[in-house]
Length: 611
Ligand code: G6P
Image (tube, rainbow, N blue to C red):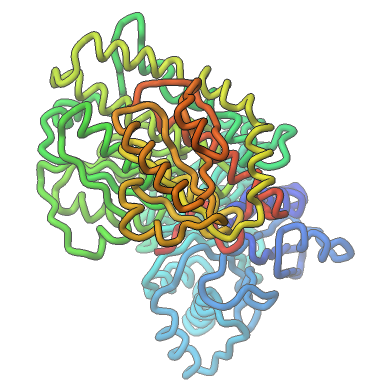
């Protein structure tokens, strides 16, 4: 949450910063601001999107070779011009942007108020700006020392970029809990919350670790801990193409990402699942694979869509590998004194690799002695660095706030893990194994086919764009898909939607069904098919509107449902990968028809780095 960008070098900073903020806008978009250093510091802040800031500065002085910019997802203080970042310390010495939460800010604020400091905003960040300034003036120390001393008094999380007016030849960056990447160019440095604003300028990056402080400037780059221990920067090359972070002709990133799925799923299993060799090879799990095979229990942790992928993982691993699985929300797991054993395997699933609750749950599991694996999309992210081993999803950058291709990539990884363990344990036979991996290879082409029906999804969306409630039902592997379908709809179209296991409908949601209630039933041919057909009858008996996702050629449901959307047949273990696609497109079209900004839904952020 919140996007941070900074530049120091010989180029004009403004174009780099404003472009960077547009790339980071998926992290938060309730206000944006920028500070540029050119003898004096000019700070401009505006409620709203980065485009509003751009309009606002169109007649202002935007010169300067050093600058910082921020796009905000509000935590402390409502979204308005004043609470927008950058924040300037009371006497104007420090200007800073912050991603995270200073948890002890009210105690620090009180102390500063007792020493004569006054505050203009409701934010925790202004407290930090003033604390740094207080230490700087009182101790007569350098900006760097003031920053390090101030941070040693802070409880909470931060990614920071800081300008000191009296030391105009440097930028200071610091990280604890919130991601920060430094881009290393020719005599210039970039700071950003992730690599997307940097990649068009340089491919050399340094990922900061918790408690790192980087001083960037004419003298080069100095990296140390907040306790002043010098560190050797590890420069890495990023493999990210600019085309991957552009819309490439699509109206929205979400639509582009939905349409990318045949390719992204292929990228997820390419080189890992071999039909020739009849094997699954997951390099990132190599060392701990025997432990996985012998696991007594697997705990899957995630949030949001990643948690839904985890639920599919539970069905897959229990079904194919016969290992008991529990699926946990990171936020619940970390605070409820869970029982974690040393021989437990914990699998953390996260697109961003930065979700605060998932990260905290991992740390807790590690402390208890469990082996922790990650399934992440963002290379070099915090979760990938905290875990003992892992598998990248290789879905490419996902920019739309509502997750789509990351979900199908996560399910693909879980399918590979479950199948590999099941085969190794001889739970699944050679023939069954071969059939499964062959079917997996066919999934991209089947999704391609589903995508050709886009007009049909648009037509159905048009009919129901104005309803206020939706119900989604599924059974077995398709129950998590029902949850995911409902989540997609509510997050981008603001229509209330609930996902339920179809059989649970009669314990509550059935009371909601009348002739105005659309019920999306995911009812492809699997072992629960007959049962879900009965559930459809129950909905129809109460005059509900049934939109059914069915297997190609299904005539039984066609005769009862109001609308059928067909997907090609596949094995039930893989059905989530296909059936979720029509639901993604249904939500997308409904949201667009309701004039919602699907890439930036209200109140949400892509990367939730606060708990
Ligand atoms: C936010 C995003 C969701 C995502 C969830 C978990 O809520 O808007 O799309 O599923 O965080 O994020 P993660 O990066 O851990 O998968």
